[in-house]
Amino acid sequence: MVLSGPKATARRLREGLHKKPSLPRFVFLVHALTPAHKRILGARFSDPELMAGGKGWGVPGRLCRIVVEGLAIGEVLSLPLLPEELLTDQEGALGRMEDAIRRAEGPVAAVGLGSVLAVVAGRGEALAERVNVPITTGAAATSWAALGNTLRVHERLGGPIVVLGASGTVGDALVEALCGLGHEVIAGGTGKALERRCKTLGAKLLPEEEAAAAARIVVGAATTGGTLAPEHLQPHSVLIDVALPPTLKRGPLPPGVVVLAGEAVDLPHGWTRGLWGQLYHLFAGYGPNQIFACLAEPMVMAIQGRTTPFALGRRLKPGALAEFTEAARELGLTPRLARGWREARLDELPRR
Amino acid sequence: MSATMPELDPDVFEKVREAIAEALGLDEDEVVPEARLMDDLGAESLDFLDIVFRIERAFGIKVPRGGVESQARGGLVEGEVLEVDGVLTDLGRQKLAEAMPEVPSEDIVEGLKVSEIVTLFRVATFYRIVVTLLAEKKAS
Image (spheres, each protein chain N blue to C red):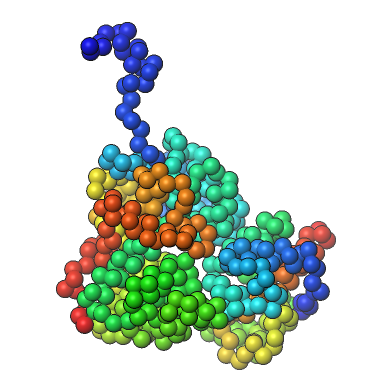
């Protein structure tokens, strides 16, 4: 019997039968990267002071809404703060992050942290203590994308693989994974602690500049960026760059060197993000057809109903890279060999 | 203005040790005063941010950014130059040695770059900074 009429409608409303099953929700927190971004956020949030380039702390707001068809709903919330402002007052940054999460729509299943927000306030740990929502830094997804891209380049070029910034979260995960797959890995860096770690993992250790010159596949995973002069790269080598700011200092590249974005991911299937979402990716440097991997990490957590973060604090959770790889495979996520906004063709890359 | 290395206050040191061990994911036993943060304990530059955050919370203080550099510049007379093209001058190295008494003088080598000062940081450096800031806080 089909129920109809005002009484039936009232009953449906009471019982919530009119509602579609709700999708899990995730939040991705970002911040302004430049003063220009801050002004743009002012326009987005209708905040005249921010638009005028005000230096106040402003109020966090929604930059865009992401719908992953049939799977999840996400919100990108932005703090109108520059990196310098976040680094100078980490406690203040923590309060703003908490505030942003409390402003999010509906029950949130997972929160991801973008850029500097992933490193301030104990790399997500202090925020996780304050809010009753799983927090993840994005480092597992970044490692997954960089690893996938590195392996694709290695299929074409072969030879040893250099990982710069091997003492960082992503660098360490890459060295461990690549060694585990049996590749010849040269870690770039110095220090007794890194020496011990490389010995355990089976990687060779060289100072950064020597390491960069030692192979034709170089992964830039340092957390500071801007540390390597281009002339240290071999001609006809490939730099897979995960660092932000980018790994290379200014200067001409040796002949035939190709620089790829290390953590680009193909735009996931069924993904819509509206005008501001498109603009956000354009301003973040990823263009219309790709996203950055760390944005996918809270999405995967929300879809899977996972309450344990993939990455929180300094190191990935044990097994996190393998678990994220499996989850990404199930959801059809694929790393993308990207040169700026566009996908790199394999024939653009050097050969063995 | 030269800093002197204060005698270890066990309570303060324990909190500093805990902050560093938590930030770097180490056992507290590994965090000894003379350990170099980067070389011995495997810290990277971003870890300093985390250590500062944990220390600020543990002690209720505010660690100024670039504190050691400004300490080294303290008392500088007009015309005196601490660095040229990013490399410390003799005066710069002398001032740095005064500002960082916990660092053996042989580590402050000729040709040391300003960007390399961070590699000199020891556990004791953070301890000294905390003790100084606590004393300032008490005085104010």
